[in-house]
Length: 252
Ligand code: NAD
Image (cartoon, rainbow, N blue to C red; front, side):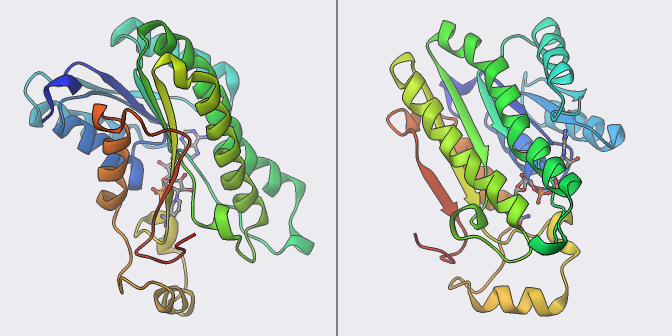
């Protein structure tokens, strides 16, 4: 555990399961206080917070319900966190959904829902978090994009557009706030074993595996360790970058 990280507060959106859950857990291990945002299962988020609080000496973790695709809920989320835990110093924009379809069949609702959950949410949360970070002259923002935001994917035009949008947004934030001690970086996971990918067919999985030089799918902890590095003091001079964690799948 790095001493400097102690008492810093990290917010992970969509932290109740999957990659977000692993990120929240890793923060706890490294001595951060953790605010876990969730919008579906309160029990899973509460259980995670109990586990984090017990694991780290003096580490505090709390669960906060909010649909981060809605600006009024994001405002209320930040107010509750400020009132109970303090100011968010590390923001991980992790919440995301997929609504896959071929372009010719894609409905406006599928486009809109994916934009709202993956891209608009990051705008709302980052806007709420940035003032406190600038005031402290220290802050870390990490966006969970995807390798398909870099290379595209048939059947995922909405998701790829949202994930590519995060990269442009993150780099603009990086340019605006680099001189204020705030870094803004992107993690682009490849194929990671979570509920999101468990729905894919064996055919799709084996086609994916062919494209991964490492010869294995990633696990949520692969992403969590990279996020924690980007949230630490060790990455002080690193901003506006996209780190693809994909077992060598894209190398671009
Ligand atoms: P997941 O479906 O297990 O978790 C996503 C989490 O986001 C869930 O807890 C969900 O409740 C939450 N969420 C969704 N919409 C929300 C909203 N409006 N408000 C609050 N929470 C919301 O998926 P995962 O695989 O853990 O994905 C986490 C992130 O990583 C996502 O942004 C996803 O796009 C990205 N990603 C995943 C993979 C992968 O292979 N699993 C690859 C690349 C990128």
